[in-house]
Length: 474
Image (cartoon, rainbow, N blue to C red):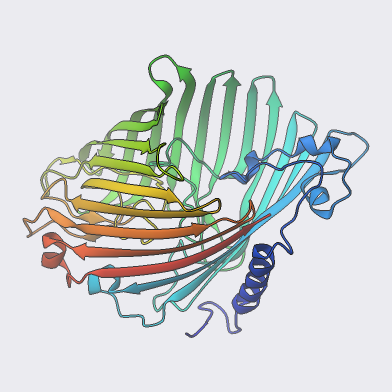
């Protein structure tokens, strides 16, 4: 496999960084490197690293390098401290018949390397500064890097917080994660995570939380310090509220999101889009059951068309408490609207805005627009550190007059001149090993059987996808 840099004349530090990461992974797996603190058990890492709080380590008298990495005082005041951390992720992917046979074949797959490093400075309980750098590389993919693939060096997050009582104001570049990440997510699956240049105001009062924000999406570009705001503009604003321990509902979320871009693309055309989304989610557990339901309605304008779109989803999980290792059976189903008629005065295609990149698995073959799916699965812990999962997803187009879309909300194939509903079926298998809080290694495979629609609009070949991911957090 050839490792190359698409934007410079010299080889990127991909192979060197990869070797360092693999050495760290081997040492960590053998117990020879993963850090420990003698006095206290550290909590699990969070999906948003800026939500981690290591202030409790001020009472830890252990003289240990990792404890000093996570908590170190500066200045004369005791409540002024800094915390350092990051992650290294190495990932190999291989597609057979990528995009159902319409892309050139790749016989040896390709590699991704993600490197994130952050510093969190706390100036008492009222203010803090969070800085995170990224250096992400791709090698071996025949096509040029996409926005999600490579960013050799840039500022990923840089924001300041100021808190006063129950209120907190945040200004700067930051990650967003709301609810079940169906519409605003960090985009964890791809190599580059999503960030926003934003102003955000949060109120936390007991069981209630509200977030109001105004943001512009940041474009990941492959070079060095060349990121910027999406041209010619993709804006996001809104209010997201969440309440816990609600009678009957358990947990509830209500939200409004506004979105604007001048560069929207749908099967029914391209142009300006101003879209408003109003949604609600309830989730919780009762005994061995877990439930998560969400519904969302969208309205606004696309060019001179009226937007009328919607989605509804239900996710149920049941833990088999009487079976060894307590496997979990689950089923998820969604209906996501598509456009009803080409070239009319309305657009009914749902826009998921900024969803998680691996919405239907890491293979990320299709995205959540103009879709109906039924998705049973099982998760089975195999001992203390192993987890096995298998899922099967059946996909249909919601509307015959709309195409299918990628996770980036861009059309893959049109819905014109075809009358087939069935997109295809997807079988996924994964095995994850997590020997400690720092290290995760996961192998997965996905087989997508092309349905009648894909056989009509594409080469129609079945897709085989395999991946191995090794991630080390500190």
